[in-house]
Structures are given as structure tokens and as C-alpha cells.
Image 1 (cartoon, rainbow, N blue to C red):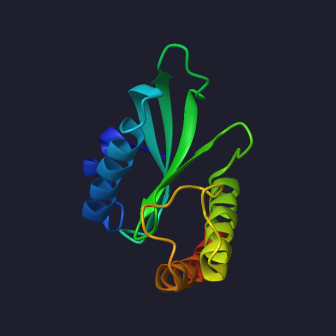
Image 2 (cartoon, rainbow, N blue to C red; image 1 turned 90 degrees about the horizontal axis):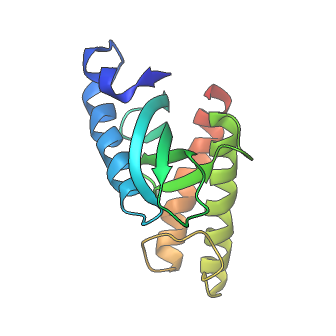
Amino acid sequence: MVKIEELGISNLEYKNEIIAESQKAMNYLSSFKWCNQILNGWLANSFGYILCIFYFEIASAKNSNADDKVWVIVGDIPSAYLDTIEYKTANDALSFYCFLMEEWIGFAKQGKPVDGCYPINVPPTIEYAEMLQIRVDLIKKDFLPCV
């Protein structure tokens, strides 16, 4: 894994895209009240702007049950965070991410409420569900074996 602070001096392919996605991941994580401060962050795996998986250590807010370590998945997909207790590897996190997105897709395609699904910041329409399905299929076909 590469520390986020060292991305600029790394020789990673798509470095500028990854740096932009790291900022996106930090902004996403910081948007939650339970995240008091980001202490450290690492790039776990990347496919440029399409998909990045980051591992973060955080200081959680007082009286919060938040984990102090989380995965954050960002890219040309809905952003998500997952705990590191149940999902120990980037592969575990990405596999469960696909499960969560497919659950949302199934509800949206059936016209059912998505209230109990992982929150995605788009309306639960068939159009968005089909666009997300294309991305999830791509992740499962091309990226999951690589993580």
C-alpha cells in the first residue's frame, strides 16, 4: 500500500487521477459526523479514476460506535465505506461493495423502496440501476480478480 502523502512522488500509473480520487475519498469520509479526523490513509488498489480502494485510520467522534479503520471505495461509481473488521482485505471490501450495489440495483429495478439498502446518492430509477449494473459487472469481471 502507498501512503496518500506519498502518491505525488510515486511512480504509479494514472497518478494524477489517483491523487484526485484520494481527495474525493477523504472528503467523503470527512462528511460523516462519526469521523472526527483522518489520521492516516493508504492506497490499497487503483484502476485510475474508474476505481480506487483506500484504507484509512481515523479518530472517531466521541460517543460514536465508528470503527477506527475503514475501507473507502471511490471512482466512477457510488462512494462507499466498509469496516476492516469484517472485510479484512481490499478484495473482501470490493466483493461486499458489489453485493451492496447489486442489492440496490435489484430493489431499484423492481421499483421497491431502497431505504434499507446502502445509500446511493441518485434516484432509484431503472436507468441508474442499469448504469450501476454495467459498472458492477465490470468490477466483477476485470477488477476483482486483480485486487
